[in-house]
Image (cartoon, rainbow, N blue to C red; front, side, top):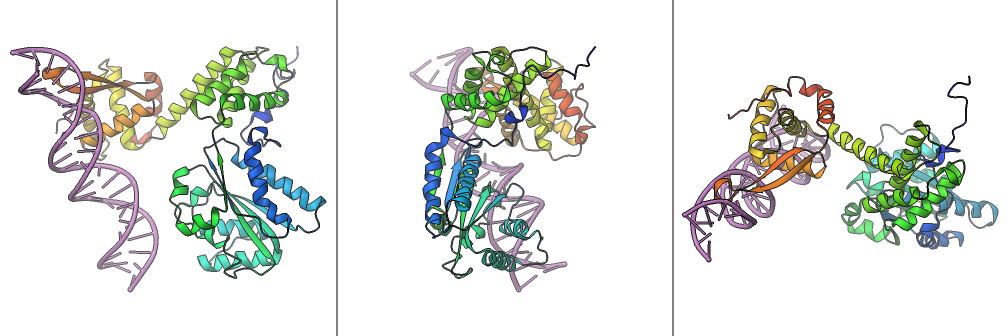
Length: 405
DNA sequence: TCTCCACAGGAAATTGGGGGTT
DNA sequence: AACCCCCAATTTCCTGTGGAGA
């Protein structure tokens, strides 16, 4: 008998196509945005510097992919079709970089393979511009997730102004492509950065369900053995779910991948609508559980107090009741005891995250107006998350002790 | 319609930690 | 080390709220 690993998957042809870091080579849904990028890069082909561009929009809207597509287009042009364009492109992911210095360091590292140490910020900048001079000509720097550097935006005005300030030689044309999914951050930039970075700014609006559907179709063609694997409703439902939520391609693809995996693990030959629904529920559950793990200690305590009440069937419970139990628990683990006002916010936050459910009550002149809370997730899920948090070891969720002190 | 309950939640004041400066 | 400054979290203070019951 052949082992269960022997057979080919009856569903996937190339699962990789649905993974997070797969980059498509064309983005028909972003034609307009790519055109704008093209016109920003156009001056470079005429021997001037490329314009500085700022790409913004929510996560999963193809900002990074669009930049990569257009940049490789330009690289191809530089190598094969143009003898005036001498181009160097650098792609920097600022995901773990929180200061301008770290970004500069990363740039120099990518150019030379050397980490700088013991340098002041301004020396590091000098070092970077030296490298620019060495390379010469057109240099396009893509700074992905640039909002990570927060308010330390030196790099964002130094590079666009490098030529006019004389940091680099006459024949060096550095420019920046900034990518951010934090719209607030963009508005808080200092005016001088806005001036230089706003040569061109390209907004990536969330995809609608139709666009998401097209994206999924294209991926599905490659990812699955043949089109019969997918039920006719699968892609419409997956894209509708994603469109209603974040409108992100990442999310839509996530649903599709999860649904296909579910089908695969059940030994089904086709992916159906119900697989997608199940996938959506599972992903949501994982998201909420992840959210529970990531709470602060105070959030965990608020959750623990409510969970204890849930276990003794005392939910939904009033804020005041939960607060009493919370105080007791906080004392037990030697933690801070927050004021009730703050606890209300904590509980409200948990409600917003879907971890709890809040309902409004009003008993008029008897009891007045108040809220009650209960768990919005399965009790076991909360118990299992909480019992894996070492800070909470001293707490027994099965005893209800209220403190009035 | 008026009153009144008991908490909700806004606003202002306070605290306390992290970073930079001398 | 001593100091200040900035920021966010939290506390303190207080007004707002909707409906049951008179």
